Image 1 (cartoon, one colour):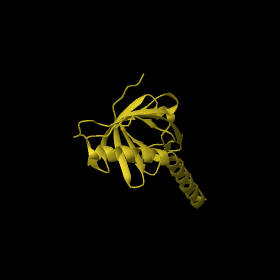
Image 2 (tube, rainbow, N blue to C red):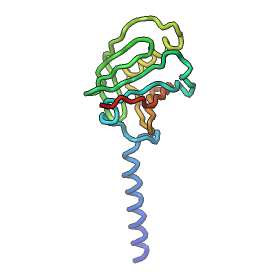
Image 3 (cartoon, rainbow, N blue to C red):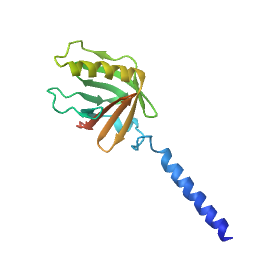
Image 4 (cartoon, one colour):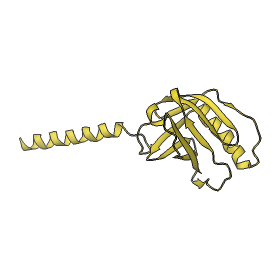
Length: 147
């Protein structure tokens, strides 16, 4: 009888661990929801682990109603996003078309548009939004404008 209780407790513990793991993504942050993003503004802090705060223009990313996305790198951009699980996709992003004086920003802008078109994984870890696709990892921090 004692062995059955012990086995039952082990099974219950395993189920609890499995249930809590289902609410997390692979990076350890929670699943991202529309509510987590709506009416929030994030600013870029690093690209692939490299600090980005020394730039004159700090790229931003804003989420409006219905996952309307706006932001800026060198150029302002906007588009309609779709969120499936933790994957954010923006099929048709509109943008101004000025050349950045900073070549690093030009490359970032091009890569960012490709990431969103292909579908980028989002992860929220505290006030940080991590945007990841392939080998590219962009870390943003909350710079809020909640209504």
